[in-house]
Length: 170
Image 1 (cartoon, rainbow, N blue to C red):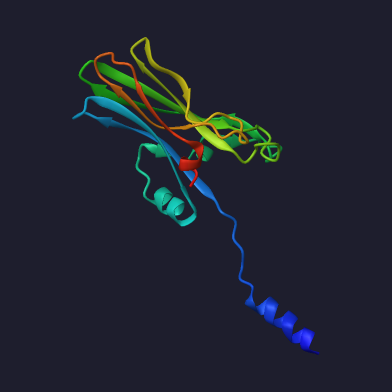
Image 2 (image 1 turned 60 degrees about the vertical axis):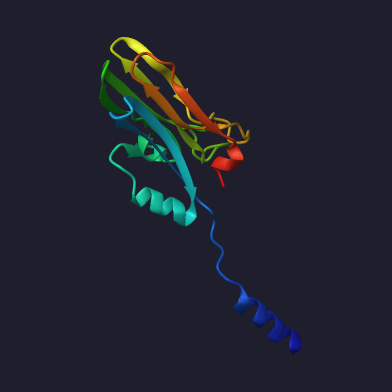
């Protein structure tokens, strides 16, 4: 009879378990004071991530919002969307394109739950920032993550800031 009380005590003392969820935002800002286009890629876990998403700005997107699921099979990505923006700096108009970078078009397949983003920046016909992945597509390899890219007016090389994978996902 004592073992029944032990089992009841164990069952009643357990709390509900929740899975962790990591949120990401990709975006850009036009910093006229610094004469720069600043691309950002941020992430946060659980409640901090929910808060980040709630407070996102008009030039920030969840990379998951940039995919369209296949109409016939919702476990697959049917197409990608891109967002476009502009920044007017002293030396011209900078055209920004941001898109999703899924780990797998099969959302149930290996790395199917992984989503990153990419960006490209042009000034006129000049490519100022070629297609740049913020994270690389293999969800099992912990490579550095690009968190910020600063593109200053005047033809300077973009400054790319990266952090170790473990620092980004903490």
